[in-house]
Amino acid sequence: MNQLARKPKSGRWLRMGSLFVLLALVLGSTTACQRQKTTEKTAQTTSSTQTVSLKMGETYSLPSAGKDKVSYSSNNAAAATVNSEGVIYAIADGKTNVIATQGQTKTKYAITVQGVQTNAAWTNTKLPILMYHSITTVKGNNLCVPTAQFAAQMAWLKSNGYTTLSMEEVYAHLSTHTALPDKAVVVTLDDGYFDNYTHAYPILKQNKQKATVFMISGKIGTSNYMVASQLKEMSQNGIEIQDHTVSHGHLSKMSYAQQVAELRNSKTTLEKIIGRPVNFVAYPYGDYDQNTLQATKEVGYKMAFRENGGTASITDPILEVRRSYVRAADDLDAFSKIVQAK
Image (cartoon, rainbow, N blue to C red; front, side, top):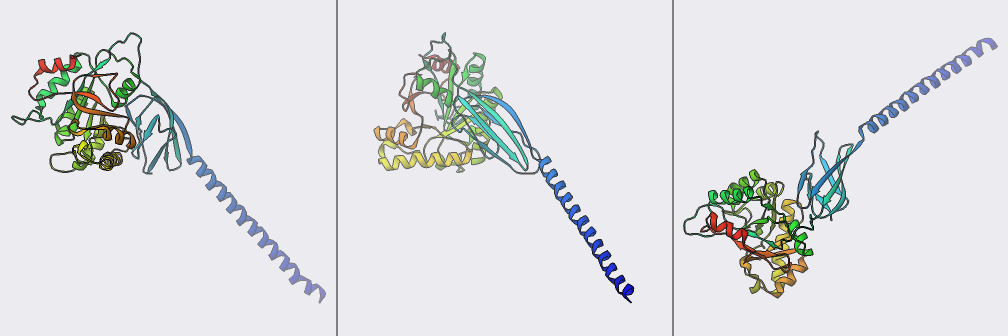
């Protein structure tokens, strides 16, 4: 009887031992699974560094691959910024690290921005800043320079060795009164007409020439003016988009508060569209007063332009920089004289 009673007890221990073994196997398998998943996740996290050198005013589009959304950040926006589409904009002399994060992959771009070039041999203190408006043919309208005429003028600049400067390059020279290379020139287009995109932009892009559009922000997307997508595209391909106020009104006839609103609201609108700082403004009609100069400072503009006045100088007041008006009536000979005027 006692031997028979002990048999079930031994069976229970046997069964319990089997359960413990089974449980250990399950736990071991789970832990191994977790280790495998952790290893896989770590393997997906990669990091690399690439070096990029830019000059002030230049842009650089970061490459992206895969289906995951990419986020970007810059740890020194004073040197260079990066927008949500991965376009880096070189602002000033300095260095920054731009991080591109895509899924578990991070890529660091070590960005070096080269400041204004100087040369002890340079003695040029004059800078022709050309002012255009519409690039199309409208008989009897001097604001409208025919496309073929504009193309011939840009070709003349290129064949005669002229270098087109960005706004940051102009600012670097004028703010420090630094001499310029002998054949420096600036191309600006006021108002933001639709033909600036369809006619002027292809010519400038083909010639690899820099230019600046001073855009009336209140006119974006209206009849005969550029739309936001065009401004964004141009800003990523060597054509700067800067401010020409909201309404293109006479600033000197506005109150101080109204002037601040005109300048600030347009700056904000344009920055949202192009994804980079807007630091330069052209006064509509070249009209401004002391309130305008103060408002321009308050809003945070670095440099501002008049509508006329002739060839600029490195000693021009930084908020009253002169420009040279190019009209439809100016043939190539007249144009060359404007560029070479001292």
